[in-house]
Image (cartoon, rainbow, N blue to C red; front, side):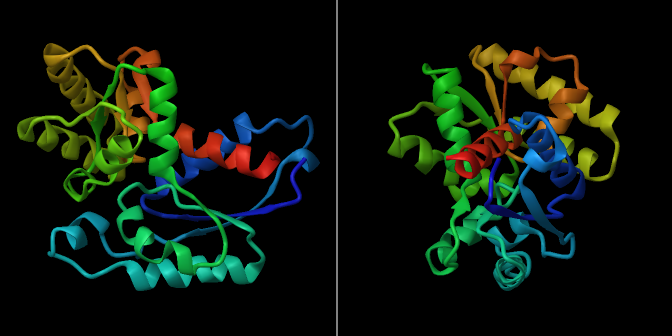
Length: 229
């Protein structure tokens, strides 16, 4: 049983945030309601698009992220989690000034990938995350081999993300199946779903479940570890 309060900043997108809370509840070592941690959540879909901002085509989401995280801290959160990979491009700029630990989804996912597939993995994500180099740096820092899809496959990945955000799960599933087929023609490695919409698309597909390394699962596992240690 954890006495720490977890603050979750979600809404990027809403379905992924809801799935994160579901995974957290399912995985948490609890036998009754009272064993679960207290979780405060802000679901703020009005935060400007992170990928567009990285590419210089949109408003900087940093003030929104800081404001929402500070709200969670003001409510009493002692640990923070943000189930959006791309948002961490901005979070990394002010992470040390927040004053409350943030469970870093990218670090957690790379470490989960290293355990599951020591020889390496594919990484699929938003265009913004891929171009930011966040995952590539985390992998390089740990001496891990992370494969980045070619440009034409990235466009198909982006389609899958958009389908999830618009609730078109069947279309998302078919898109991610096309992505996996192209990647596995190049090299048969597990796929890191490094955008929090992509685990939902993968789960809706007919792809083998054991070849998905979910950033949502990795974040939930890392939160549980931080809450229970």
